[in-house]
Amino acid sequence: MISQLAFPSVCVVDEDPADYQPILDALNSLFVSTLHILGNDLTKLPKEPFKGVKLIFVDLHLTAANGKVAASHTANVFSKIVSPDTAPVVAVIWSKYADAKVAADDVPPDDQDTEADLFKKILLESEPKYAGRLIFLEMKKPQKDDRPADWTAKLAKKIEKTLGDQSAVDFLWQWDRLVREAYVGVSSDLTSKAHSAANASGSELKDSLKDVMRLLAKAQAGADLKNSTAHRHLAAVMADLLVDHLEHSESLEGLATHGDWLKQKPTGIAKDFPARMNGMLLTASISANAAAFVPGTVYRARNPRQFYRLFGRRLSTLADMCCQSKRPAQKWRCWRAWVQPVAIELSPECDVAQGYRTSAFVVAGLVVPVAFLKEIKKAESISAFPTFHLRHVLPNFEAQDAVLIFCHRYKATLELNAHPDWFEPWFRLRELPTASLRNLYAGQASRIGYVSL
Image (cartoon, rainbow, N blue to C red; front, side, top):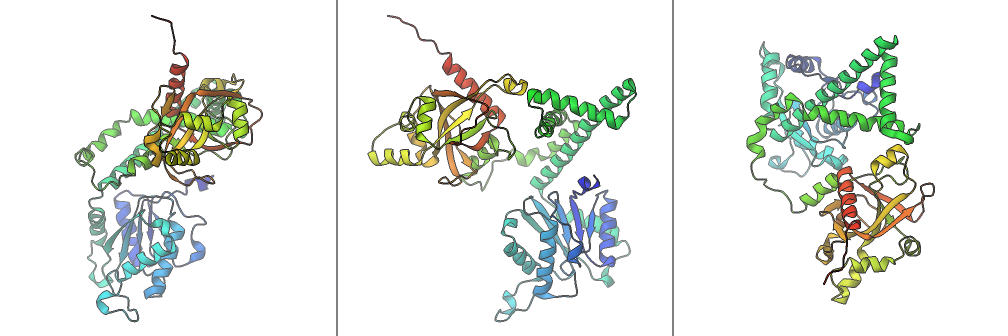
C-alpha cells in the first residue's frame, strides 16, 4: 500500500552531503517535497523510472570518475530515475564543472564538449525518447570555499531565478496542483459521506468507505458489474467527480496570470499540429481487457464476404458511394486501394450500462488517408470528422493523418455473445464524438419524405 505514494515530482541527485544538504534545505524552505537520491550506487535506484518527475537537480560527478565515464554514469542514473514517457521534465544541471571542457582525441580545444554538453549528448543517445521531452537548465554550484554563510537562503532564490521564464511549464505545474486539489475534494466528499453512513450503521470508516465505492461502481456499471470491470466503472465515476471539482475550483483564478501570453498568436506551430492534436481529442486507445462492442469502438472490417452478409452491400460499393468522383481512373483505383473499411458501435450508453442492450448496433464507414481528403463525397448520409492523426497502427495501415467518415445507410446489428473474428478492434472514439455521430444518425434515420406537386 505504501508503494502507491512513491510518485515524486521533484528529485535531487547528488552524492556529497556538503552539496546536497543545502539544496534540500533550500527546497524545504520553499515547502517543496523532494526525493533525494545519492546516485553513486546503481543497485539502490528505483526498479522502475518515476513517471511523475517534473523537476530534477542532477550533479555530474556522482562517483570518482571524470569525463566521459562520469557523464555515462550520470546519464545511466538519470534514465533509471526519470521515465522517458513523462514530459516536460525540467532537468537542472547542478555542478561545479558544467562548463569544464572534456578533452577528446583529434578535437580542437575550442570544439571540445563541456561536461554538461557531454552528459546531454550521452543521455539523448542512450534514450532517444528523451528528445523533445527535457528542458535543460544549468545552475552553477560554487566551490566549497566560495560558499557564503547564508548559502541555503541564497540557493532558494537561485532556484527560483534559474527556473525563470518557463510560462507553459508553470501553467502545467499549476494545473497539476489543481488536479491534486480536486482529488482532495473528491476524497474528502467521499469520506464525509462514508463517515455519515458509518455513524448511522455503527460500522468503521474504512468499511463504510468500501460500501460507498461499491454503490458507486454498481450505479455506473449496471449489469456489467464483474470482477474484471468493477474497478473501471468506479474510476469512471471518480473521473466525473474530479472534473466537477476542477470546474468549480476557486484556484482556477490562479491561472489568470497566464492570460497575457495565452492570448497571443501561436508561433512555430507545424501544419500537421491540428491533426495530431485531434488524434488526442477525438480518439483513444482500446483497453486490453475491454468488453466486446463497447460504444464508440471502431472496428476494421477485414472480410468482404462477411461484410456483404452483414450490411447487404459490398465493401467496394461503400467505397464508391463515399468517393466524390471516379475520374481520373488512376485516382479512383488508389482511393479503393487505400481507404480502410470500418464500423462503429453506436448503442446508447444507458442501454449498455443497464444491461438492456440486446444486440450491438453498428454503422459502417471508412478511414480515409488525408491525401484523399478532397475525394470524400459531401452528402447528408455521410458524416465526416475533422482530420486527425491516427496513431493506432495496424498491419497495412501505418500511423498517419486521416479522416473518419460514416455512411448512415450502412447499418446492422450483431449478436452480443459472438464477436466475429473479421471485426478487428482498432481504436475508440471518445464519448462526445460518439454521441455526436449517434445524433447525426438519428437525424438521418428520422428524415421524412412526402409527395408534393
